[in-house]
Image (cartoon, rainbow over all chains, first blue to last red; front, side, top):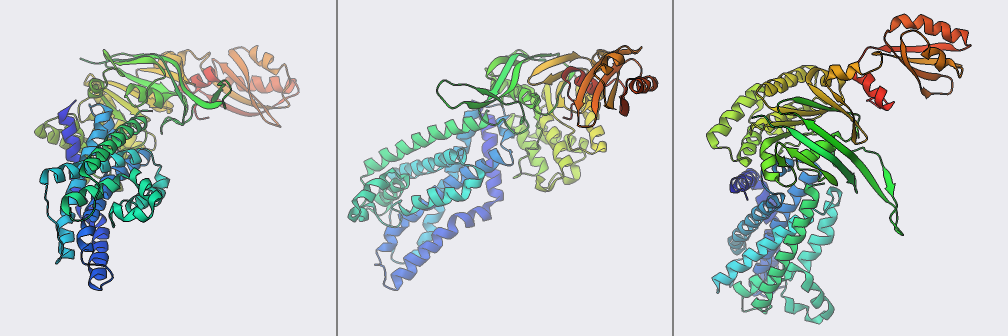
Length: 256
Length: 341
């Protein structure tokens, strides 16, 4: 393991992220904030939604922002760099094992997902206030959960980015990301699905469910949520699964 | 201390399409028992090479001959199906990180980092190799100057012309001062002026005691730059030597590519018996004319004799192309095909 090379690759990704900061900011936060505004402010103040919905919505919005950012930050550059610009080749020729280049991408994606999560909390709070009732009751559990969420989003980005053809990017959003968000218990708690028993079981294969429910359990425990132990085990399982799958796909792409 | 390069019995069979720059190859089918036959593309078929420390070595061959795959195997990008490859004493596939320190690679197609400026590309590349901040800034400035890119150094490379991207790719490959420089079709798509600059830079790098391996299908380039050449086709070597040795191995040296109308069956035999002719072979035929390649030790002075011979046998000489000893002729002699086919 060559730490200098690894550090230089991280520095490169940080440099590029800084350069594209405004674009990244709009891309990450505009949609969730509009959603927060319409559902949390417009619908609540007009009486179509109960005021408590504001607090229920916030953890889901954090989960979406983090997961979307992590997937996007890793998958999109990989799709372009492996298939079109081939610009990743300069890092494939750097004196480090190929797997470490994938790990570096995951770390960079995780950091971006964490930053996204930490920025969206005050932003959404500003849009929603007054009447948001959130607090971090168990800071360590919260920290572990957001790290596990950031990891699965970045590992998912690695697996997707190394498996999807450039011409299928639209399909990836239509077939993977959109259903993941809508069936990710982001806008409603998992228990709300009890009238759809089959769907309620089926959504458990969606890692975003555990992200939303885990954040709900630590930020707004007054609402129904999955047990924290189940959330932690499931997130850890998805982290490992997606990392192994992502590394395998990356090595297949990197060496012909 | 200069570093050599060696491969032993390299084979590579692609199960899917080969990487960009190594497209081509020839398609064979294997018969798996009871299964659909799977298309396999053999790109290297037992290639053994030895490139001496400090020489400029050329791999010459047509598209799909296996040149880019050979470079890919030697630069850790293509895993061989069997066989071994070494850079200096290091096995490419067992000591990858060490090998990557020793090599610099200029790919066939530019793969510059589009998110960075020209200077940043050089500086980050050096940082990947653990080169300190002062040294990498000095080197970047020197290389930008040498490759005439100083004025554009702080611009994003997205808007660069093909020639500028190629120059920057070479500068990047030199940033960590590698012992062996690989250049895959370095002058493809370059204007003549840039090509001459590139040749000067390669010669200068070689004079500093470095090893250079370049692939090309440009005869002039191979002839002008390389100390030794390997001609490869269908994934294995067909000739090896200095450009002069290789050219001297063509029978006679001159190649006369002839076309006849109404060629008679014994015309080739008659051509063979002309004084100065070393070898006469049939070449491709069309509906109204037949071709013949004649290797001889003289050129133009043979034409009148050939024309007479044809007329006497009831045939007619319709087209003549004379070429002097060249690597192109050598390739044609070994493979029956032109390098540009």
